[in-house]
Length: 137
Image (cartoon, rainbow, N blue to C red):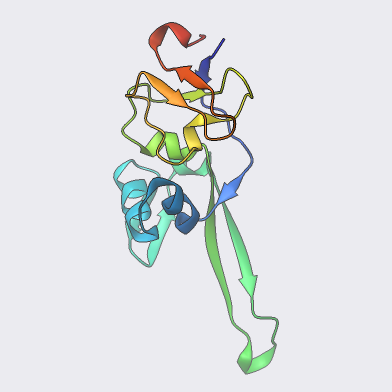
């Protein structure tokens, strides 16, 4: 039986650009949406992660490997892919959906929309029913 359950982190970390590729948005649009939903604060180029956003994110650091005057380093944020469902305009916010047949995580499949009554899994092609009766509490 298809079931939904409260959001749990997947451990699959993605950049704003990668999230945007799934959602059909640019990285800038994803960051604006993250800010609107309360996961980021600040302005473009100077965002900070809010306490709400810390649950879903980690800050990573990178450098160019050089020392002295040539040394450059930067930090960037990676987001757990579960945040996709938190920032979308979902009918059932906070619910993860899994395929009845192959147990694939449906929420992150390109174009997933829980407003549809049936979702065809992109992994196996199975048609899953998305409804209130399939949410386990």
